[in-house]
Image 1: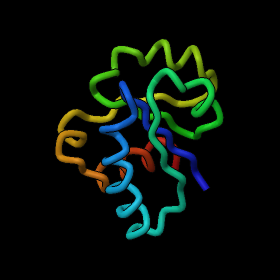
Image 2: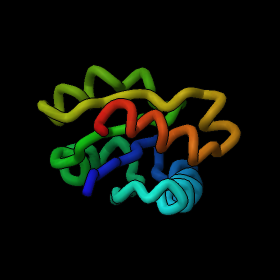
Image 3: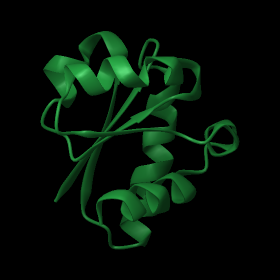
Image 4: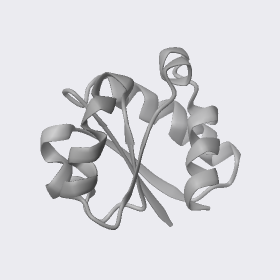
Length: 99
């Protein structure tokens, strides 16, 4: 099972996206655990993830998060997918990165 962690400023807006992603993953029969946290919890919550996805509002922190969680792939969520809360699109993006 893949572990996908979404990070944003406070963890609130991404938690809405997590719900749509979980639904899409279930429909795709893609086994994964998806959770959302604020960037301040990256080391504690995401250092063992298969993939960290950053909300567009914190994409500037990509290098910092990579340094805090070495060995974990870190990507920014496409702004359009995030704005539309396109869970299916984000899950497909995650699958393309981690299988």
